[in-house]
Amino acid sequence: MNFIIYFSIGLILSANIWASPPQVQPTPKPSSLSPAEIQLNQEVSKLVNQMQVWQKQFELDPEKNRFLSHCQELEKNQKINSKEYKACKKFYENLFSDGKLEINLFFGYRDTRPSNYVLDLVEKNSLVKTLTATCPRPQNYIETCGFRRDKDDADKLIKSVKGPDGNPKEVIFRLNNSSISLNDDYNRKSDYQKSRTEKMKELFKDALENSDVVYYFGHSRNGGGPDFGPAQKLTAENHVDYDWYKQTKMGKKLMLEALKNRDPNKTLLLGMFSCSSELHFSNSFAAAGAKNTIFSTKTMYDGELIPGIMNSVNFIMNLSCDKSLGVTQLPFHAKVFN
Image (cartoon, rainbow, N blue to C red; front, side, top):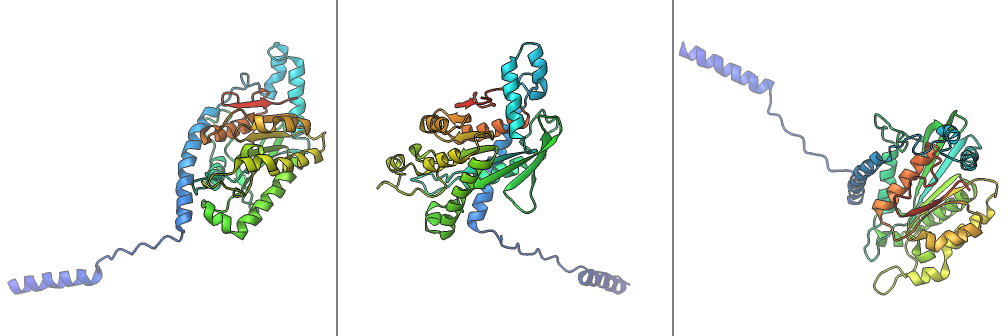
C-alpha cells in the first residue's frame, strides 16, 4: 500500500517537472542607445518637468489680458482706447494675412565655455515634447500644448487656433537647433556641425525676411551674435573671446541685412531672448525697420528665457492686446502694436 502511494506521488512530481520546467528569466537586452543619447533623454526629461511647472503659470483671462475678441467691448467701456484697439487688430490681421501664422524659434549654439556642455539640443527637444503634449483640463487659455508634429518634417509643429476674423487658422511652429550633440569638443571637429551651422544661418535669414514671428534663443556674444556654431575664437583660459565678437559682429550683420531685405509692409514680431539684447541690438533693429520687438534688459538665465518665450507665444495665440505680451514680469521689454 505504501509503495503504491509513494509511486503515485513520484509520478505526479515527475509529471509536474516535465510539464513545468523552471522559468529562466531572460537576460535584459543592452540598450540600443549610445551614452550620449541616454544623457540627452535624461536631461530632456528633467527640463520637460520644469516646463510643465512654468506652463501652469500661463493661464490667462480674456478681459484682464485683453484678448482681441473682448477688446471691442473693452473699447466701449473705455477700458482700452480706440487707437490701441485698432493697432492691435491690425497687428493680428497682418500676422494672419495669408491665412496662417508662422512662428520660427531658433536655438542658437548654447555652449557653456569653459565647460564642454552644449544646451540647445536639450532645450529644443524639451520644448517639442511640451508643445506636443495634451492640453490640460480645464485649459484656461493655455495654448502652448496640443500641437501635432508634421509627418514629413520633425521640426514643424502644427495647431489650429481662432484667428482675428473668428475663423480657425493654422499655426505653424518651427523649432531649429544649432548643435548636433551635447559635446562642444566633438562638435568643433565635426564637418556635420559646420554644415549645420551654415544651414541655420540660411534658415534664420530666410525667416527674418519672410516669417511672421521670429524668436532667437541663445547667446548675444557681446553684440556679435546671434551665433549658430561653436565659438570661433577662445581665450587662453578656454572662454569665449567676447572682444573678438564685439569687433566682428558677424551675426548682427546677418540680421540687419535680412531685415533690410524684408518687405516693410509685412508685419514681423522679433524676439531676442539673449543676454542684454536691448543694449546690443535695439537701436540697430529700429534703424532697420523692426517695429514689433521683444528684448531682454540684462544677463539672462534659462529660468527666465524659456518661460519668456512660452508666455509670449501663449499671448500671441490667444490674440492678446496686452502690450507686454506676457514678458514684462520677467526682465524683458516688449514694444508691439506700433
